[in-house]
Length: 368
Ligand SMILES: NC(=O)c1ccc[n+]([C@@H]2O[C@H](COP(=O)([O-])OP(=O)(O)OC[C@H]3O[C@@H](n4cnc5c(N)ncnc54)[C@H](O)[C@@H]3O)[C@@H](O)[C@H]2O)c1
Ligand SMILES: O=C(O)C(=O)C[C@@H](O)[C@H](O)[C@H](O)COP(=O)(O)O
Ligand SMILES: [Zn+2]
Image 1 (cartoon, rainbow, N blue to C red):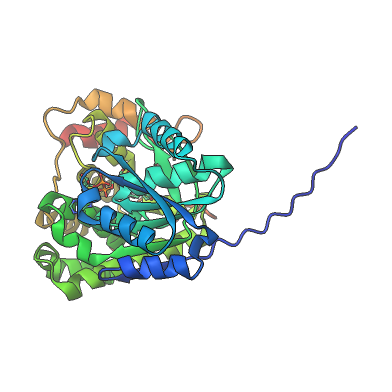
Image 2 (cartoon, rainbow, N blue to C red):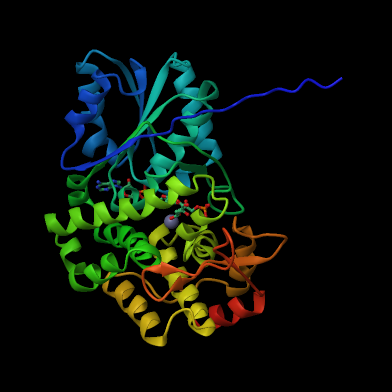
């Protein structure tokens, strides 16, 4: 006997991404107006962001009459682990959190990736909100619903697509970021320019120093343009069945470098090197000219990002690590390429990645 279980899933994952300055009060006002539909909140943050922003948000939520507890993880990529997920889940359970709660993630991409994954499985799923406090999280991580933890084998291998109820991109929080964290966020911004926004790329060529100087108009410009590139892609292909792979530009080599360096390199730094590797490969295929490839490298350098593989990286191990990439199909490496600046190459219907023989990318890596 066969019972056919007809579950017609209609999921409304519409949400707002609010870009502004000092959005703490707006967040609390939104919660009061019914955002998440919950009255008890797990505020998840890291040890650096706790004192800078999260504690204030936590106190404001309590002062508004809600139940709240704050859960703090050590700052840094090493916290994006299964162990830390378990720690957060057990801590929440011990504090009496059940399915009637919501998660408020306050921090950078490590916090939003981890907290979003915790929310996705806690009690089989509770709502969450992202309050992004790094340029990288604002540019990329807090938007689009990719949540994950790293494993010893590689980054982001275990996770889920889980969309937040709302995202707050608080540009004021960038003021306390160290220079290398601004640079790291710029790597994803340059990636967005390369793959979908020529105007953004050219704006950065003119104005990249203004971002380091905290120029308000320049910061607002990149926040808005990043968001526009990312959400337009995600809206068309949330689960990465084709088009969304373009957001992985530079990440095939980038994520492998991140793992092989044991996170000595920041995510954006590793992506910058990966962007150079992929542009060099793209030049070989004629997808970008020598001049366009040189412009990409020059802009990354002006954004204070590395463009060569550090000496301490074992290049043979790096090539092997490429196979942990999620774009791999049938054991074959696949790369996304920009076409000139501001577009990507399409290789077929709903196909945006090209199969690459290992020796081709190994050759590029050897020269870097
Ligand atoms: N989900 C996605 O689509 C996506 C996209 C890009 C990157 N990511 C992930 O995001 C992570 C990187 O994010 P990140 O660069 O924000 O890292 P992060 O969260 O580790 O933050 C970087 C550092 O800055 C500190 N910090 C955060 N906000 C601060 C502030 N306002 N002032 C001073 N210090 C502050 C943090 O404590 C941390 O030490 C990686 O794990 C990467 O895989 C995910
Ligand atoms: O949103 C996406 O899709 C991306 O690929 C954005 C990337 O910048 C981000 O680093 C993402 O987490 C990488 O995902 P993965 O699937 O390669 O682990
Ligand atoms: Zn990335």
